[in-house]
Length: 204
Ligand SMILES: CC(C)(COP(=O)(O)OP(=O)(O)OC[C@H]1O[C@@H](n2cnc3c(N)ncnc32)[C@H](O)[C@@H]1OP(=O)(O)O)[C@@H](O)C(=O)NCCC(=O)NCCS
Image (cartoon, rainbow, N blue to C red; front, side, top):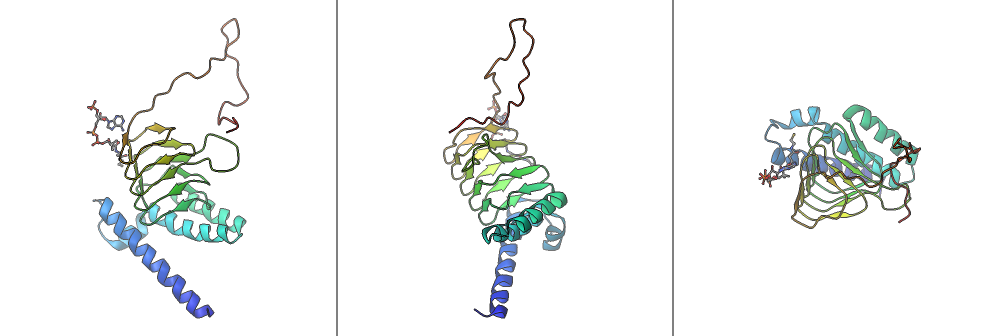
């Protein structure tokens, strides 16, 4: 393929993706007024466009450049997406600030995230350690989805939920049940401060 043809194809693809992204905003945010406003003022759109560039570079072994773009995007938008994360079509990030999407996260089509969401890991081991969100999943503001499991198609995660296990398709999940999992104190009742208690580095 000649360079001009390749360039033309890339530009048409970028234009088509951007149109889909903007349509997704109109479908899911009643506050959106017009395309220009969406392009100029929606950090989710900026993060997505920059992620596509970073992901392309990551896949083509330009990893430092990919990380630099991802970091720049984080500075501008407050949204941190690892360049290796796989993201489907019509992904909508509303408000954006404080979102973290980890390296091995996978996101299907038509997924929505609100601000403050973490798609994170609970292990320092290499390999799959972040969640997979299937098509149509919605994750409410401030929710944390932690671990290498799947959130099934169309599931809803309530705001501020902490999800650490697989979620079946279509389920709605709320709540964050913190519970004591270890009680570190000496015989006099004084706390024993461990070097680090998170994340866990348990071998899978
Ligand atoms: C989880 C969610 C999808 C559930 O919506 P829903 O199916 O319409 O559920 P309802 O509002 O009817 O609530 C059902 C029950 O769950 C509870 N509940 C709803 N959301 C909850 C949440 N995030 N955390 C804890 N409990 C919640 C309600 O209090 C209600 O409890 P009750 O039956 O004891 O009265 C929705 O509440 C939510 O959190 N959406 C995310 C929205 C968001 O983040 N918006 C950000 C905009 S900036």
